[in-house]
Length: 295
Image (cartoon, rainbow, N blue to C red; front, side, top):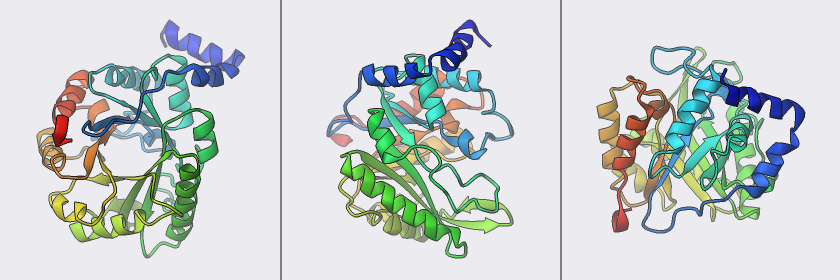
């Protein structure tokens, strides 16, 4: 571990109040204005025990390596901020990496990858009050929907409550509604257009108001049909990077041209590209974002 990260650990051990102090003085970046897309790096996967990327089952296990990759990504032109759990955002706060960047808190991480209770996705990280207290810019929630799993009901209720609570703080709720299916202990998203549209229909109706709700959706080939199902702003998610990068980038590029698609929230595909060149992967993704009146 580098001297810098050793100092970070010492700060956590001896001056835990430094986290709140850093949050209080952080220079915030405005949510992108009309005409400019949003580009956020996602880093909340480890909290669900999802550490694998492609054929590397423990790719995200090393915290110093992950922080190095995040800091490279956040330094690239056009990157607006990061989405993460408290441990990761607070590391970045103490390292000064969130200055003039958006910080979006990931809220429900209790649906551990591969667990029998995976779809009973409890809120085990941020809540709306803590996001507001830390002066963060939004809260993200995963809302996986399986009609055959009773855990879906409690997840829907908890997400609805979180949307309402974030709206009371006038803070963006980034809802990721995914219709899913289970094969044994493996949960996978149903990416057929009709399934994605069902997820959109449920997700956009959560909470007492949708005034501050944005959706985080997969980029599917039939994205025009999906976008016809909502008037809410949409950010494209990266997902598990199992396809060739050029195929993924081409799909993002097509979807980003659609009205209502406001940008990208991508994690593993950019932080762990096949050649490990994080800067190049982030720059390529950023080049797909429309500019000016196209956004």
